[in-house]
Image (cartoon, rainbow, N blue to C red; front, side, top):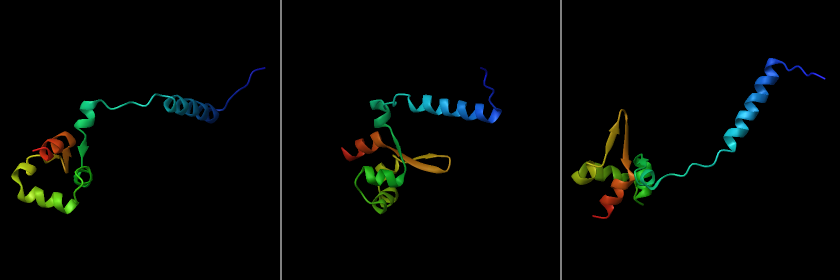
Length: 90
């Protein structure tokens, strides 16, 4: 007995199989280097350092050593977690 599938049914089956294969992929672990150099926006940096966002904004304006840690990528500003760790350990 031969079964004929419509194109739509074939696409749905292919999508289902692809989704199942993706879901079964092992979780990719971050390397220590990637974890240490994670990009953080200003809010995430404040949370990471256990400070308020207003404190981070004030430090950006008043502390030259902290201002150096700020990276600008196009229109977004970010900090690297490993650099924030080094700053806190000074």
